[in-house]
Structures are given as C-alpha cells and as structure tokens.
Length: 146
Length: 146
DNA sequence: AGTTCAAATTGTACTATACAACTAGAACGC
DNA sequence: GCGTTCTAGTTGTATAGTACAATTTGAACT
Image (tube, rainbow over all chains, first blue to last red; front, top):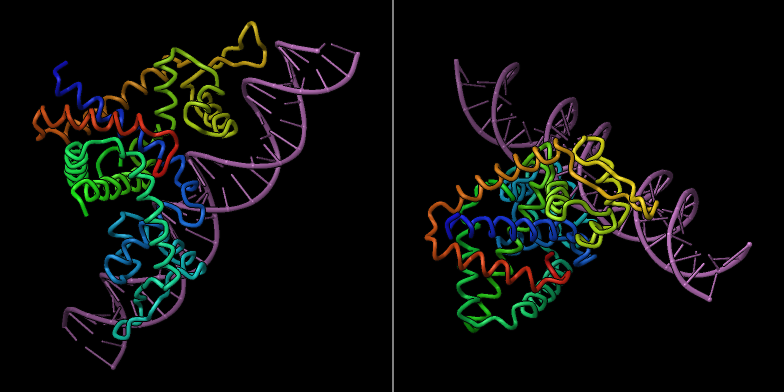
C-alpha cells in the first residue's frame, strides 16, 4: 500500500472515530443546547434570520424535522417567528435575546474546550490542520461518512 | 485574533460541520449497517471477539445500549455469542462469516467514498492530514464535540 | 452462608430523524 | 378569475440510538 493509500485509510478511520463519538455524545455536551440546536441557532445568527425551509435545505434535513426543532426552540424562548408580510406562508425565524445569550455562552464553552484540546499544538500545525478540514468539508456534497 | 486563535476557530467550526453531517446521515450511508453497528463489528474483528462490557467501555456507551445493539446484530446473523466456559455471566462476541463479509463490503464501500473525495489531494497533504486527525482524536478523552 | 461485585437484560422514556398525509397560501395558465 | 400546481409548514406515525433504573444471574470474597 502506498503512503497515500495508507493515509486515506487513516483519515477514514479517524473520521469514523470522530463521527461515532460525536454521534454518541450529541446530547451530552450541552444539556440545554444540542449540537443540532446549536448549529441551527448559529445559522440564524449568521444570516440574521431565515426560513425553516432554508434551514432544512442547508442542513439536508427534512422539513418536518426542522419544524419540530424550531417549535422546541420557540418553546424554549430562544427564537421567535415573524410572519412575512408579503407571503403569509412564510415564517421568518429570528434569535431572541435569550437565544443570542445562550448561543454566545455555548460558543464560548465550546471554544474553550477546543482551545484546551489544542493547547499544545504549534501554530503552524493548527493553521495547516484548519486548512485541511476546510478543504475536506468543502469537498463534501453528501457523500459517505457525513 | 492571532493566527493560532483563528485556526482554532476554524477547526471548531469545521469539526462541528462534520459532526452534524455525520449525525444527520448516520443511518443513510449503508442502510444495512449503521455507523454504530459498523464500528462495533470493526472492533470485534480487530480484537478477535470481546465482551459486551468491553464494547460499552471502549465506546463510552451504556451497557443497555450495547446489549440492544448486540441483540440486533445477532438477530441479523452478523455476530454470535459464545458463553465463556470459566465465567457463565460472560458472553464472548464473535463475528460470523456473514458478519465478516458485510463488514468487508461496507469497509470497501466506505474506503471507495473516501478515496474519491480525496483523489485530488497530493500525497504529502494526505499524510499530514492523517497525522493531524490521529493526534486530534488521541487527545480526546470525552471532551466537547465528541 | 451472606454480602458484595460484575455482566447482561429489560422496562421506560427521550431525542432526532424520515416519510407521508394534510392545510394554507401563492402563482401560473389560459 | 378560477382551477391546477407549486411552496411552506404542521402533524401523524414509525424507527434508531441513547440513557437511567431495576432486575437477574453468576462470581468472588469475606
């Protein structure tokens, strides 16, 4: 096996390990904000509000799944729905103040965890690893292991 | 923000993206063998058989979860339980021939998907990326984003 | 022998997910 | 302008994977 083939094997194995761990602990990380909720809130913040359909498309989730997630987030007071004045089918979702606060808090906590784990890495390695991950994810259109 | 801090942000973001995608598509990849089942079978192959308790410890899963996974895999004919002669509480789990075949088949299919996605990468980058992932996962004792 | 420890199962509940059926509203075509 | 078709969202139903608590069974150690 060439060095390249061997490296691909390793990448596969390590990505699988990471995916499995993420799967198993998705709900344990931040009891008040699951990984899915976190990414949905993050998307809302980034876009400054969007429709449930946009979330479904962006995350390749079924609209029913998003509908229920959104309902839960609204129940928790983290987002609010504003009826679109021009199209009454549409609900534009926005973070509430409480949503912004919790998002910021979880972001800080996650950032601290990553920093802690990467604290021993030389800057040069961090920069290269980050670039590789971006490149890897950019190449993903819904393929295996996602 | 320093280059190192910025890289950590990127690593966090990209790992989160990957984890979310993996979470969402865990069941879609290989309908006949979920990511969890795949890793359990892989562990059995690697170790040449082990106990349910070992699987639970290694993957940080509850024993009840493993018990049900194992029951499903046995029902599907992929593994078999052998009572330990010395300790009758213990069931040593082994792959059946069908289990070995399906594991090999899914491994091939996953390998092909990874190769396809990484086909444009220079060997040098593959090797470095693989090393970074190993290092990253090795530092994970159950921390955030897993 | 009795207590405590360990392996596994079972009961129950929750979260995230998909698919299908449905409702409500918009837009198009003629 | 009215039916057809499209779009946004909800709800019903089912499944997978998970955890925690209670239980059973067998081992080990006083």
